Length: 384
Image 1 (cartoon, rainbow, N blue to C red):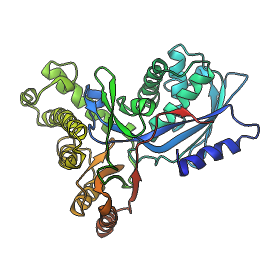
Image 2 (image 1 turned 180 degrees about the vertical axis):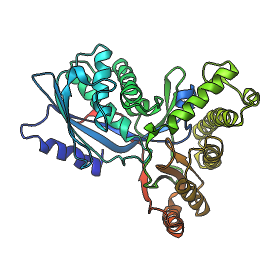
Image 3 (image 1 turned 180 degrees about the horizontal axis):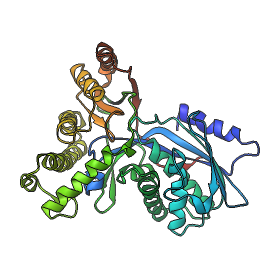
Image 4 (image 1 turned 135 degrees about the vertical axis):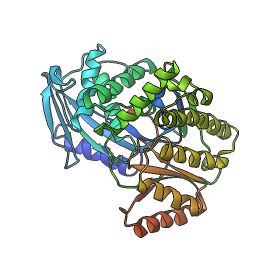
Protein backbone atom coordinates (compact mmCIF):
# COMPACT_ATOMS: atom_id res chain seq x y z
CA UNK A 1 0.00 0.00 0.00
CA UNK A 2 1.15 3.51 -0.68
CA UNK A 3 -0.01 7.08 -0.34
CA UNK A 4 -3.69 7.52 0.39
CA UNK A 5 -4.15 3.87 1.34
CA UNK A 6 -1.45 4.13 4.00
CA UNK A 7 -3.18 7.17 5.46
CA UNK A 8 -6.53 5.36 5.49
CA UNK A 9 -5.05 2.54 7.58
CA UNK A 10 -3.31 4.96 9.93
CA UNK A 11 -6.49 6.96 10.47
CA UNK A 12 -8.42 3.80 11.32
CA UNK A 13 -5.79 2.67 13.81
CA UNK A 14 -5.80 6.05 15.54
CA UNK A 15 -9.60 6.14 15.67
CA UNK A 16 -9.69 3.35 18.24
CA UNK A 17 -9.05 4.65 21.72
CA UNK A 18 -7.93 1.25 22.98
CA UNK A 19 -6.69 0.08 19.59
CA UNK A 20 -8.34 -2.46 17.28
CA UNK A 21 -7.45 -6.13 17.32
CA UNK A 22 -6.20 -5.68 13.79
CA UNK A 23 -6.54 -3.88 10.46
CA UNK A 24 -7.11 -5.75 7.22
CA UNK A 25 -7.19 -4.43 3.67
CA UNK A 26 -8.49 -5.69 0.35
CA UNK A 27 -7.94 -4.05 -3.04
CA UNK A 28 -10.29 -2.62 -5.59
CA UNK A 29 -9.82 -3.98 -9.07
CA UNK A 30 -9.87 -2.97 -12.68
CA UNK A 31 -10.82 -5.54 -15.28
CA UNK A 32 -8.48 -5.37 -18.24
CA UNK A 33 -10.75 -7.45 -20.45
CA UNK A 34 -13.45 -10.10 -20.06
CA UNK A 35 -16.49 -8.05 -19.08
CA UNK A 36 -19.81 -9.63 -18.10
CA UNK A 37 -18.43 -13.13 -18.60
CA UNK A 38 -17.82 -14.10 -14.96
CA UNK A 39 -21.43 -15.25 -14.48
CA UNK A 40 -21.35 -17.01 -17.84
CA UNK A 41 -18.52 -19.43 -17.12
CA UNK A 42 -16.00 -17.45 -19.15
CA UNK A 43 -12.44 -16.23 -18.70
CA UNK A 44 -11.57 -12.73 -17.53
CA UNK A 45 -8.40 -10.80 -16.71
CA UNK A 46 -8.78 -8.41 -13.76
CA UNK A 47 -5.97 -6.67 -11.91
CA UNK A 48 -5.94 -5.74 -8.22
CA UNK A 49 -5.38 -2.04 -7.67
CA UNK A 50 -3.06 -0.24 -5.29
CA UNK A 51 -6.20 1.32 -3.77
CA UNK A 52 -7.87 -0.51 -0.91
CA UNK A 53 -10.65 -0.71 1.62
CA UNK A 54 -9.29 -1.01 5.15
CA UNK A 55 -11.27 -2.59 7.99
CA UNK A 56 -10.24 -2.05 11.62
CA UNK A 57 -11.86 -4.72 13.78
CA UNK A 58 -12.30 -5.18 17.52
CA UNK A 59 -13.74 -8.41 18.92
CA UNK A 60 -16.64 -7.95 21.33
CA UNK A 61 -17.69 -10.13 24.25
CA UNK A 62 -21.30 -10.47 23.02
CA UNK A 63 -23.15 -11.29 19.80
CA UNK A 64 -23.47 -7.70 18.60
CA UNK A 65 -22.06 -6.35 15.34
CA UNK A 66 -21.41 -2.64 14.91
CA UNK A 67 -20.41 -1.29 11.51
CA UNK A 68 -19.24 2.24 10.80
CA UNK A 69 -17.55 4.05 7.93
CA UNK A 70 -15.70 7.31 7.46
CA UNK A 71 -17.96 7.97 4.47
CA UNK A 72 -20.34 10.69 5.73
CA UNK A 73 -23.18 9.22 3.67
CA UNK A 74 -22.84 5.76 5.25
CA UNK A 75 -25.20 5.26 8.18
CA UNK A 76 -23.78 3.18 11.06
CA UNK A 77 -25.33 -0.24 11.61
CA UNK A 78 -25.89 -2.28 14.76
CA UNK A 79 -27.36 -5.78 14.84
CA UNK A 80 -26.94 -9.28 16.18
CA UNK A 81 -24.97 -12.06 14.52
CA UNK A 82 -28.19 -14.00 14.07
CA UNK A 83 -29.89 -11.15 12.18
CA UNK A 84 -27.53 -10.39 9.27
CA UNK A 85 -29.00 -12.46 6.46
CA UNK A 86 -31.14 -11.69 3.40
CA UNK A 87 -33.81 -9.09 4.07
CA UNK A 88 -32.24 -7.94 7.35
CA UNK A 89 -29.65 -5.35 6.30
CA UNK A 90 -29.82 -2.62 3.67
CA UNK A 91 -27.42 -0.10 2.19
CA UNK A 92 -23.65 -0.23 2.40
CA UNK A 93 -23.75 -2.31 5.59
CA UNK A 94 -25.23 -5.22 3.66
CA UNK A 95 -21.88 -5.95 2.05
CA UNK A 96 -20.07 -6.30 5.39
CA UNK A 97 -22.93 -7.81 7.40
CA UNK A 98 -23.75 -10.17 4.54
CA UNK A 99 -20.23 -11.56 4.63
CA UNK A 100 -20.52 -12.29 8.36
CA UNK A 101 -23.81 -14.08 7.70
CA UNK A 102 -22.32 -16.11 4.83
CA UNK A 103 -19.28 -17.09 6.89
CA UNK A 104 -21.59 -18.43 9.58
CA UNK A 105 -23.47 -20.36 6.90
CA UNK A 106 -20.12 -21.85 5.89
CA UNK A 107 -19.53 -23.10 9.44
CA UNK A 108 -17.14 -20.40 10.65
CA UNK A 109 -17.98 -19.25 14.19
CA UNK A 110 -17.73 -15.50 13.71
CA UNK A 111 -17.48 -13.50 16.96
CA UNK A 112 -19.36 -10.31 17.70
CA UNK A 113 -17.29 -7.37 16.52
CA UNK A 114 -16.99 -3.66 15.93
CA UNK A 115 -15.84 -2.84 12.41
CA UNK A 116 -14.76 0.58 11.15
CA UNK A 117 -13.96 0.94 7.46
CA UNK A 118 -12.15 3.48 5.32
CA UNK A 119 -11.56 3.28 1.58
CA UNK A 120 -9.78 5.09 -1.21
CA UNK A 121 -11.44 2.95 -3.88
CA UNK A 122 -13.80 5.38 -5.68
CA UNK A 123 -17.41 4.45 -4.98
CA UNK A 124 -19.62 3.56 -7.94
CA UNK A 125 -16.72 3.91 -10.37
CA UNK A 126 -16.75 0.29 -11.55
CA UNK A 127 -13.59 -0.47 -9.55
CA UNK A 128 -15.23 -2.95 -7.19
CA UNK A 129 -15.39 -0.96 -3.98
CA UNK A 130 -18.06 -3.42 -2.81
CA UNK A 131 -15.90 -6.54 -3.17
CA UNK A 132 -12.96 -4.80 -1.53
CA UNK A 133 -15.17 -4.12 1.50
CA UNK A 134 -16.52 -7.67 1.54
CA UNK A 135 -13.10 -9.28 1.29
CA UNK A 136 -11.40 -7.08 3.90
CA UNK A 137 -14.17 -7.90 6.40
CA UNK A 138 -14.23 -11.59 5.40
CA UNK A 139 -10.52 -12.10 5.98
CA UNK A 140 -10.64 -10.19 9.25
CA UNK A 141 -13.61 -12.14 10.59
CA UNK A 142 -12.16 -15.51 9.60
CA UNK A 143 -8.80 -14.82 11.21
CA UNK A 144 -10.44 -13.49 14.37
CA UNK A 145 -12.53 -16.67 14.43
CA UNK A 146 -9.28 -18.61 14.68
CA UNK A 147 -8.92 -19.73 11.08
CA UNK A 148 -5.44 -19.76 9.55
CA UNK A 149 -4.98 -17.76 6.37
CA UNK A 150 -4.28 -20.25 3.59
CA UNK A 151 -5.44 -20.90 -0.02
CA UNK A 152 -8.26 -23.18 1.11
CA UNK A 153 -9.64 -20.54 3.47
CA UNK A 154 -9.45 -17.88 0.78
CA UNK A 155 -11.61 -20.02 -1.51
CA UNK A 156 -14.19 -20.22 1.28
CA UNK A 157 -14.03 -16.45 1.70
CA UNK A 158 -14.58 -15.91 -2.01
CA UNK A 159 -17.76 -17.96 -1.83
CA UNK A 160 -18.96 -16.09 1.24
CA UNK A 161 -18.38 -12.70 -0.36
CA UNK A 162 -20.25 -13.77 -3.49
CA UNK A 163 -23.20 -14.96 -1.39
CA UNK A 164 -23.21 -11.66 0.49
CA UNK A 165 -23.48 -9.64 -2.70
CA UNK A 166 -25.97 -11.94 -4.43
CA UNK A 167 -28.24 -12.91 -1.55
CA UNK A 168 -28.01 -10.10 1.01
CA UNK A 169 -27.33 -7.04 -1.16
CA UNK A 170 -29.33 -8.40 -4.09
CA UNK A 171 -26.80 -7.65 -6.86
CA UNK A 172 -26.62 -10.54 -9.32
CA UNK A 173 -22.88 -10.28 -9.84
CA UNK A 174 -20.41 -13.03 -10.68
CA UNK A 175 -17.30 -13.92 -8.69
CA UNK A 176 -14.56 -12.13 -10.58
CA UNK A 177 -14.22 -9.20 -8.17
CA UNK A 178 -14.04 -11.30 -5.02
CA UNK A 179 -11.61 -13.77 -6.61
CA UNK A 180 -9.06 -11.16 -7.63
CA UNK A 181 -9.39 -9.32 -4.31
CA UNK A 182 -8.38 -12.47 -2.42
CA UNK A 183 -6.03 -14.22 -4.90
CA UNK A 184 -4.25 -11.38 -6.73
CA UNK A 185 -0.50 -11.43 -7.23
CA UNK A 186 1.20 -8.03 -7.04
CA UNK A 187 2.68 -6.96 -10.36
CA UNK A 188 0.38 -9.15 -12.44
CA UNK A 189 -3.15 -9.44 -13.67
CA UNK A 190 -5.08 -12.58 -12.71
CA UNK A 191 -6.50 -14.84 -15.40
CA UNK A 192 -9.65 -16.40 -13.97
CA UNK A 193 -11.56 -19.26 -15.57
CA UNK A 194 -14.89 -18.80 -13.83
CA UNK A 195 -16.16 -22.18 -14.97
CA UNK A 196 -13.78 -24.13 -12.73
CA UNK A 197 -12.24 -21.37 -10.59
CA UNK A 198 -8.68 -21.98 -11.85
CA UNK A 199 -6.52 -18.85 -11.70
CA UNK A 200 -3.10 -17.92 -13.06
CA UNK A 201 -1.06 -14.71 -12.66
CA UNK A 202 -0.21 -12.94 -15.92
CA UNK A 203 2.69 -10.46 -15.52
CA UNK A 204 1.88 -7.50 -17.74
CA UNK A 205 5.25 -5.83 -18.26
CA UNK A 206 3.67 -2.41 -18.78
CA UNK A 207 6.53 -0.40 -17.31
CA UNK A 208 9.08 -2.35 -19.32
CA UNK A 209 7.10 -1.54 -22.48
CA UNK A 210 6.86 2.15 -21.59
CA UNK A 211 3.10 1.93 -21.08
CA UNK A 212 0.71 3.19 -18.41
CA UNK A 213 -2.75 1.91 -17.55
CA UNK A 214 -5.01 4.89 -17.05
CA UNK A 215 -8.37 4.63 -15.30
CA UNK A 216 -10.83 7.34 -16.31
CA UNK A 217 -13.58 7.72 -13.72
CA UNK A 218 -16.56 9.41 -15.39
CA UNK A 219 -17.94 10.18 -11.91
CA UNK A 220 -21.30 8.99 -13.16
CA UNK A 221 -22.35 6.54 -10.49
CA UNK A 222 -23.96 3.26 -11.32
CA UNK A 223 -26.06 0.94 -9.20
CA UNK A 224 -25.77 -2.76 -9.97
CA UNK A 225 -28.84 -3.70 -7.94
CA UNK A 226 -31.21 -1.47 -9.95
CA UNK A 227 -32.26 -4.31 -12.23
CA UNK A 228 -30.21 -3.69 -15.37
CA UNK A 229 -27.40 -6.04 -14.39
CA UNK A 230 -29.93 -8.70 -13.44
CA UNK A 231 -31.69 -8.31 -16.80
CA UNK A 232 -28.45 -8.93 -18.69
CA UNK A 233 -27.80 -12.02 -16.60
CA UNK A 234 -31.34 -13.27 -17.23
CA UNK A 235 -30.87 -12.76 -20.98
CA UNK A 236 -27.69 -14.84 -20.87
CA UNK A 237 -29.36 -17.62 -18.92
CA UNK A 238 -32.23 -17.71 -21.40
CA UNK A 239 -29.83 -17.78 -24.35
CA UNK A 240 -27.91 -20.65 -22.76
CA UNK A 241 -31.17 -22.55 -22.19
CA UNK A 242 -32.20 -22.13 -25.81
CA UNK A 243 -28.79 -23.32 -27.00
CA UNK A 244 -28.85 -26.32 -24.67
CA UNK A 245 -25.67 -25.38 -22.79
CA UNK A 246 -25.22 -24.93 -19.08
CA UNK A 247 -23.49 -21.56 -19.42
CA UNK A 248 -22.89 -19.29 -22.40
CA UNK A 249 -19.16 -19.73 -21.94
CA UNK A 250 -19.61 -23.18 -23.46
CA UNK A 251 -21.16 -21.84 -26.68
CA UNK A 252 -19.49 -20.96 -29.99
CA UNK A 253 -20.20 -18.14 -32.42
CA UNK A 254 -21.85 -20.73 -34.68
CA UNK A 255 -24.17 -21.59 -31.80
CA UNK A 256 -24.96 -17.91 -31.27
CA UNK A 257 -26.09 -17.57 -34.89
CA UNK A 258 -28.84 -20.12 -34.18
CA UNK A 259 -30.59 -17.75 -31.78
CA UNK A 260 -33.58 -16.09 -33.45
CA UNK A 261 -34.27 -13.40 -30.86
CA UNK A 262 -32.11 -10.37 -31.86
CA UNK A 263 -31.56 -9.22 -28.28
CA UNK A 264 -30.53 -12.64 -27.00
CA UNK A 265 -28.31 -13.17 -30.03
CA UNK A 266 -26.54 -9.87 -29.37
CA UNK A 267 -26.05 -10.63 -25.67
CA UNK A 268 -24.64 -14.07 -26.45
CA UNK A 269 -22.42 -12.73 -29.23
CA UNK A 270 -20.80 -10.34 -26.77
CA UNK A 271 -20.11 -13.07 -24.23
CA UNK A 272 -18.61 -15.54 -26.71
CA UNK A 273 -16.53 -12.96 -28.57
CA UNK A 274 -15.33 -11.36 -25.31
CA UNK A 275 -13.99 -14.68 -24.03
CA UNK A 276 -12.06 -15.06 -27.29
CA UNK A 277 -10.61 -11.55 -26.82
CA UNK A 278 -9.40 -12.50 -23.35
CA UNK A 279 -7.51 -15.46 -24.79
CA UNK A 280 -5.99 -13.30 -27.54
CA UNK A 281 -4.85 -10.63 -25.09
CA UNK A 282 -3.28 -13.13 -22.71
CA UNK A 283 -1.40 -14.74 -25.60
CA UNK A 284 -0.05 -11.35 -26.69
CA UNK A 285 1.04 -10.39 -23.17
CA UNK A 286 2.76 -13.71 -22.59
CA UNK A 287 4.61 -13.24 -25.88
CA UNK A 288 5.88 -9.84 -24.72
CA UNK A 289 3.61 -7.97 -27.14
CA UNK A 290 1.48 -5.99 -24.69
CA UNK A 291 1.71 -2.88 -26.89
CA UNK A 292 -0.35 -4.74 -29.51
CA UNK A 293 -3.35 -5.23 -27.20
CA UNK A 294 -5.06 -1.92 -27.88
CA UNK A 295 -7.30 -3.14 -30.70
CA UNK A 296 -8.73 -5.81 -28.41
CA UNK A 297 -9.69 -3.17 -25.85
CA UNK A 298 -11.39 -1.14 -28.58
CA UNK A 299 -13.30 -4.20 -29.82
CA UNK A 300 -14.38 -5.03 -26.29
CA UNK A 301 -15.83 -1.55 -25.82
CA UNK A 302 -17.73 -1.71 -29.11
CA UNK A 303 -19.22 -5.06 -28.13
CA UNK A 304 -20.26 -3.82 -24.68
CA UNK A 305 -21.78 -0.70 -26.24
CA UNK A 306 -23.61 -2.29 -29.17
CA UNK A 307 -24.34 -5.92 -28.27
CA UNK A 308 -24.54 -5.81 -24.47
CA UNK A 309 -25.84 -2.25 -24.26
CA UNK A 310 -24.24 -1.36 -20.94
CA UNK A 311 -22.20 1.67 -21.95
CA UNK A 312 -23.19 5.33 -21.48
CA UNK A 313 -22.54 8.58 -23.32
CA UNK A 314 -19.89 9.51 -20.76
CA UNK A 315 -18.03 6.23 -21.27
CA UNK A 316 -18.26 6.46 -25.07
CA UNK A 317 -16.98 10.04 -24.94
CA UNK A 318 -13.90 9.34 -22.83
CA UNK A 319 -13.02 6.19 -24.80
CA UNK A 320 -13.18 8.07 -28.11
CA UNK A 321 -11.21 11.01 -26.73
CA UNK A 322 -8.51 8.79 -25.26
CA UNK A 323 -7.93 6.83 -28.45
CA UNK A 324 -7.90 9.97 -30.60
CA UNK A 325 -5.23 11.52 -28.35
CA UNK A 326 -2.77 8.63 -28.46
CA UNK A 327 -4.08 5.77 -26.33
CA UNK A 328 -3.34 2.43 -27.95
CA UNK A 329 -6.80 1.22 -26.94
CA UNK A 330 -9.56 1.99 -24.45
CA UNK A 331 -12.81 0.54 -23.18
CA UNK A 332 -15.39 0.79 -20.44
CA UNK A 333 -14.70 -1.44 -17.47
CA UNK A 334 -16.95 -2.81 -14.76
CA UNK A 335 -20.70 -3.34 -14.84
CA UNK A 336 -21.42 -0.32 -17.01
CA UNK A 337 -24.14 2.39 -17.08
CA UNK A 338 -21.46 4.77 -15.76
CA UNK A 339 -18.34 4.18 -13.75
CA UNK A 340 -14.91 4.01 -15.37
CA UNK A 341 -13.06 3.34 -18.58
CA UNK A 342 -9.47 2.19 -18.96
CA UNK A 343 -6.91 3.25 -21.52
CA UNK A 344 -3.59 1.69 -22.47
CA UNK A 345 -1.33 4.69 -23.01
CA UNK A 346 2.34 5.24 -23.87
CA UNK A 347 3.84 7.02 -20.87
CA UNK A 348 4.79 10.01 -23.01
CA UNK A 349 1.18 10.43 -24.18
CA UNK A 350 -0.50 10.40 -20.76
CA UNK A 351 -0.72 14.22 -20.44
CA UNK A 352 -2.25 14.51 -23.93
CA UNK A 353 -4.80 11.78 -23.22
CA UNK A 354 -5.79 13.31 -19.89
CA UNK A 355 -6.22 16.73 -21.49
CA UNK A 356 -8.25 15.34 -24.40
CA UNK A 357 -10.61 13.48 -22.06
CA UNK A 358 -11.25 16.59 -19.97
CA UNK A 359 -11.78 18.72 -23.08
CA UNK A 360 -14.20 16.27 -24.69
CA UNK A 361 -16.36 16.05 -21.57
CA UNK A 362 -16.39 19.82 -21.14
CA UNK A 363 -17.42 20.34 -24.77
CA UNK A 364 -20.37 17.98 -24.31
CA UNK A 365 -21.40 19.43 -20.96
CA UNK A 366 -20.62 16.19 -19.12
CA UNK A 367 -19.39 15.77 -15.55
CA UNK A 368 -15.66 16.43 -15.24
CA UNK A 369 -13.95 13.01 -15.04
CA UNK A 370 -11.02 12.02 -12.87
CA UNK A 371 -8.00 10.14 -14.18
CA UNK A 372 -5.97 7.67 -12.15
CA UNK A 373 -2.69 6.09 -13.18
CA UNK A 374 -2.86 2.64 -11.59
CA UNK A 375 -0.53 -0.25 -10.90
CA UNK A 376 -1.08 -3.81 -9.78
CA UNK A 377 -1.44 -4.22 -6.01
CA UNK A 378 -1.47 -7.20 -3.63
CA UNK A 379 -4.41 -9.32 -2.50
CA UNK A 380 -6.32 -8.89 0.77
CA UNK A 381 -4.04 -9.08 3.79
CA UNK A 382 -3.59 -8.15 7.44
CA UNK A 383 -1.52 -4.98 7.78
CA UNK A 384 -1.74 -4.20 11.52
